[in-house]
Length: 259
Ligand code: ZN
Ligand code: FE
Image 1 (tube, helix red, strand yellow):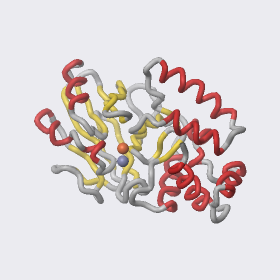
Image 2 (spheres, rainbow, N blue to C red; image 1 turned 90 degrees about the vertical axis):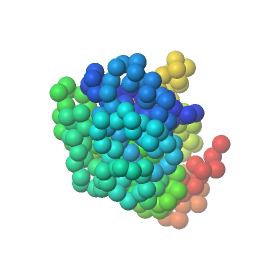
Image 3 (cartoon, rainbow, N blue to C red; image 1 turned 120 degrees about the vertical axis):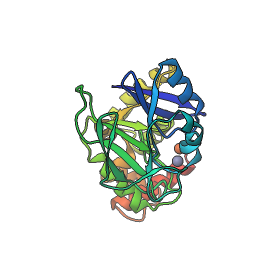
Image 4 (spheres, rainbow, N blue to C red; image 1 turned 180 degrees about the vertical axis):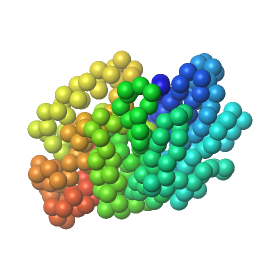
């Protein structure tokens, strides 16, 4: 199975999974890069996965319909271009022969879902997670529709996945997130190390993604809301308490104004 990040707009990725003949794409905000990749590699489009309703994630769905030879899957609790198979926590689907399980991950939007590979593929590749705008490398999505408590729970759910899970986020925000992470945890050596690697990747024009769950547990301040250093930094920014929800709320507001 092949995994490709198709760049779209300024900093989106449309993830494409293909087996050499059939492809599925995740969150096609724009049809053009998908059509170009399908044509270039002579692939048929066997399905579309949608994580949430924002235009930069669904804007290309309707334009892809003429080429689509399978379903559009999307969150049951959001308005997604129709037809769409509605999904929620615990639902299982098969994508190019791979089993995926659906997780409810509200916070960025109220009905946001994620797709996690729930069984082995034909190769020994690590399981895939398509998490939309919930979890970014070294960061998380803005709270447009959800509460800090919802986001904290959603992120905890993703952080509990097997460490080698490949984290396929929808935006290339890694370097700016790492700058914020450095302000939160200046002494985190693993984060500094990762920043150097990501800088080199971006200079070579390559994506910093996918990340892994185990790496995110070590570098992502939003997954580290129980770490004493993160709690202290959040308290210094006005966190209302030491609990993980208060810490996450303070980090998120700090990040919103961080330049
Ligand atoms: Zn979004
Ligand atoms: Fe987005």
